[in-house]
Length: 425
Ligand code: SF4
Ligand code: SF4
Image (cartoon, rainbow, N blue to C red):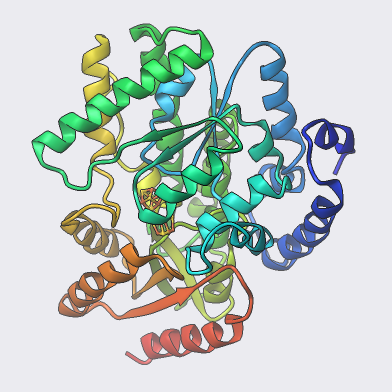
């Protein structure tokens, strides 16, 4: 990595502690990613992004701040990035996916909080992530109780705007979300000093839709019998989508897809014939959480689709691009975002429909229902997910895990047995 120490120092980061993180990440990435054979050449871009993860993109964000631009840090796929980009600001994902940040979060949060929340709070308070230092404003949401209370703690340290998420999807809830998006728009306008005009919002809707289209195109390749790219690589790309420049991301991902087109024509697969096709469903996998994908893909399986917020929930459904009046554009945003089926809603039967549909579309052999430890919402919903899958005759394995490696061997045994069972079916 190039020398970014001065930049990190200027951001007020704890350099000594940060050095420890910089030491472990390349090894982990090498073990999980660079050890794969026959990766598409276009993965070089994403390798580069990871190798410079705390350098290149943070430097770009700082450059835009020097020109008066604002950066908003977000934690949930319900926050409409379109509004932020329409105000000539930048949105960047902030969800923490490393155990490295968890102890810092535990200093202020109960231990029985999900690792994603603990890592996100720890990354800010321990000053070891440049993205968490750069963001001028954090945007939270009232999706789960753990997050709701964590925002109050973070608000003592950084400006934060919290979006009030509906818990149901009746018309009055959709109206409330439309109203929340309008309030958010006003907040963003006030904070940036830039008006969100209908023209700007049209451009931003197209910008974010283009990113979604690129991800959708990428996922289509995973429906093939011959898989031209591993699940691990697609996960990495999805994780990078949360913080890369959206135009560049879409362009690089389309370039990769061009290469994958060639691979499909030439019947190239990165897995041997008969590898079991696995879907993951459940809680998000923020970078650098590659644990379960790595275990599956080194145990005789291939992850072909993720029904998660770092998977299909992030890109499925586009925002209607035909609206030209601001109120109608905001309604179009509501329509698209309220199609996301997160376990924070009651009831959330749409998620079961999604899982069953995706299982068919991606021709999966089995499903792993993964829950981040202490996520009550997804854990409880697992009851319905696993029952529906059993009724549909789709084998399912329920797993609860965290960011540590302590359960890696046990998981490997369970996943290995599950895949073996699929092979004997
Ligand atoms: S799981 Fe729910 S709360 Fe978490 S990022 Fe996804 S939509 Fe947001
Ligand atoms: S994984 Fe569950 S507990 Fe953790 S932030 Fe998401 S919804 Fe909340």
